[in-house]
Length: 339
Image (tube, rainbow, N blue to C red; front, top):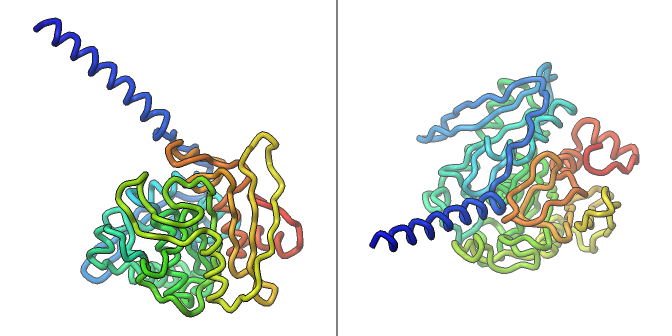
């Protein structure tokens, strides 16, 4: 018996070592370095109907009145603080540079009430008023910080990207533009949002090797579990959003220059324009995973490959036409990523 017990203990010890090693390799991701910022992020609360909602706010020092507002929406099983870290504090740094407020709202039980009919999150099942939550945040910062209500933008990752799509579809007069990563729009029979009508301007980032949201369309699931229903492909998502905004021509396609010749994740940019204005932009990350590309944080390996050829937060700020990034784009500088 004693020998059996020793053998079992040895097996359990080996399994623990292997499990720890697998976790560290596949999921562990070291926290990014906190850059020097002009202010500290604050955790705040707001009442929305009968619910108290929470969020982080980053307001740069000496913010001028009439500044823009960027709302950053986290993915499943995350919260605003996690999203702030997993985007490498890039939005805060860019806010200091270009002069805008950043909010990181917390989803209800770490998810959002997005457009997907087949989502089984409590936020969806309980029909939580996330549109109302975002509206109250905008009203608060218009009142308290003097942000310009015409310059409100949203960036979302994964489930947060789906919520950003809902904002673009249902409230194009409330948000001027959105950007998403890892979030193709749901197939028509999986969508609770309107299937017709104009949307806000949309920027998409999609990895061809995304293990959760298939680049070519199909069932969205967490590694084969917990289905979220069917989604369009990345290309179909871009084309459908363009169609809804009256664009009948195909996109302009460009292969972006590589930042590192050893980086095997080239970037293609597809732009659907209306009256010479980019209305829908899709960044295809060849070989990329279910991540937000940026230089400061390495997503867990289990979510797929990171690229060093795209800084999605910086590209979103450029797409939103904020601050210096927008000015350089307008002047034809041709800068990419962190201008």
